[in-house]
Length: 101
Ligand SMILES: [Ca+2]
Ligand SMILES: [Ca+2]
Image (cartoon, rainbow, N blue to C red; front, top):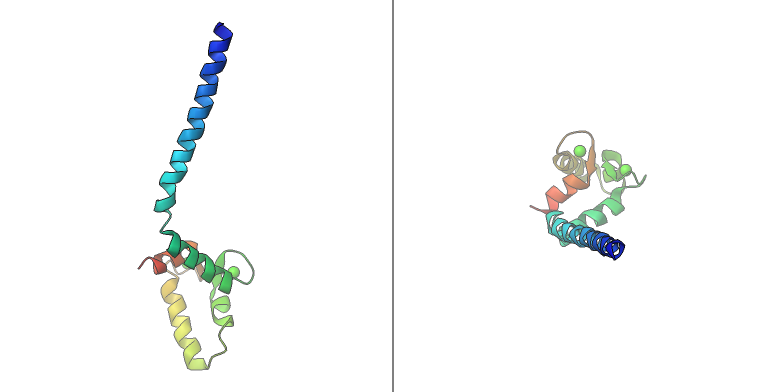
């Protein structure tokens, strides 16, 4: 009888752990930017990130453009604006900042 109670109690603990996990996930979802912005970032990342390192280098950012030099220069400027920490790469965090404006 006591053993049964212990088993029931541990089962309750497990299911409580699971339900609090689910709650934590729910709470995290809206904090991770709005879904729309997030998917935009993912799209942009997929479009530009050619070596799949989840960062866009300046070369990758400019590679897609079949444009003339002045447009490329403008894009290079845009890239520098996107690259908030100036490490030469645009990552998801920086993309999210752009799309959350
Ligand atoms: Ca890359
Ligand atoms: Ca950066």
